Picture 1 (cartoon, rainbow, N blue to C red):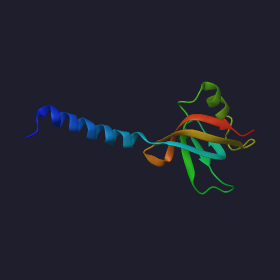
Picture 2: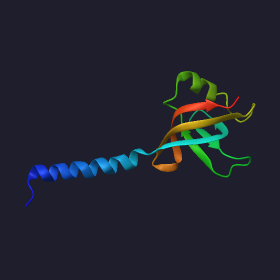
Picture 3: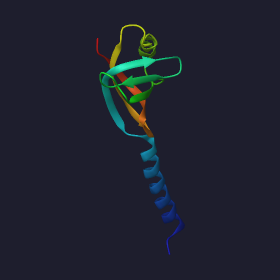
Picture 4: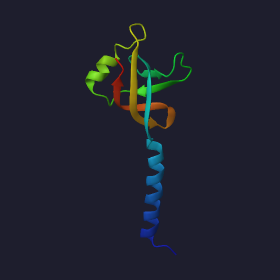
Length: 102
């Protein structure tokens, strides 16, 4: 029979592994055209992207967020590469840094 402390350790280890899978993995996407509105940004890869990645920019520095607000799809295209963490869904990324292709 297992001791209660051994069971607790086993449960903690299993919980840690499960939580690690839900936090996501590091990803780099781009370069691609990014289009933002007041709620979110979408990054399309390729000349006519069929798949768009939803980018959460809340962790970026304020200067990058202000620059992204100008990327509305109406003006000159904003081309970027995003480094970040996948958020459960492979089509959603929390941006850690952004590299501008000027």
